[in-house]
Image (cartoon, rainbow, N blue to C red; front, side, top):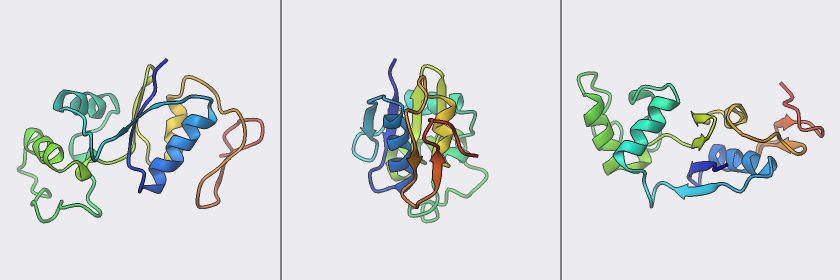
Length: 140
């Protein structure tokens, strides 16, 4: 049972997702994708398995998205992937991959859909939002 998170420790959503994985008693493989980006095939597979288009997997905020002209609808998926691989900050985060599938975990509780183990106790996000109750059940 391997769980892999493509993580940015500077991102609150990514930190919350990692904490929920650990709250299920799982120590995941943590890939800090800004320094160790996934290869092209891995990135394509994650996007496809998450049910997203390449464009939906691109992060705009805080990236060179506008400067690179990536909003141009004429750009192909291959061109967008090239940009993401050249500038990993363009890869939206966090992606999580388990034996049950892959998801872009925005919001972070999306990870609950693919974790192979239940939450082991209460969990509250960094912003104070309670997500999991004391019995390990999703609150909303």
